[in-house]
Image (cartoon, rainbow, N blue to C red; front, side):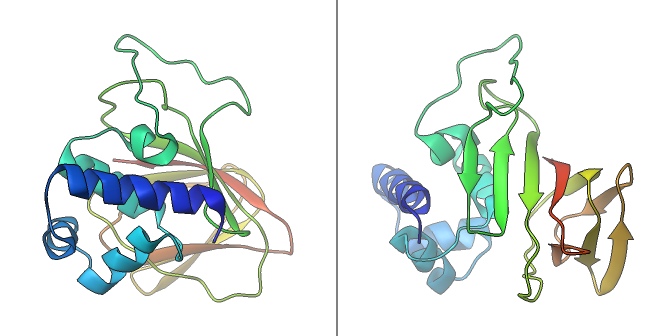
Length: 182
């Protein structure tokens, strides 16, 4: 696993330790199995961005703090210049760039997400809340709640993110989209 994932895992462990909670309690509060949580905290497994957002919301910390180790400070506005958002490359297929990393107490988590083409099957995940995706470039297959939906540049979808969902770049080209997790 990459260094960035290991650093996020260390911050998950540090938060749990600071709150004096067991892995069982944290897993239960975040709606994942204890086994999955322990994998995330080990730093040897991919940590879904949705889980990082859930963990931050559940324990009252900023998502940016878990991603980067830095707390956001702005209460009025936060500008993210092109290509400068806090990036998380979960694996070689998915790259997330936080677009509200400087804003404290953000009520939504906007990301620019890049999905590279891959022959791997779509990995499904779910998290509390809702999600909005707007395709900026490319074509994407979104699997959600047993449905396969093709989205092209300019298309958007709003959905219940507690339903199992996952995405895949189509046509052998990367897809870039705006994802807002609420």
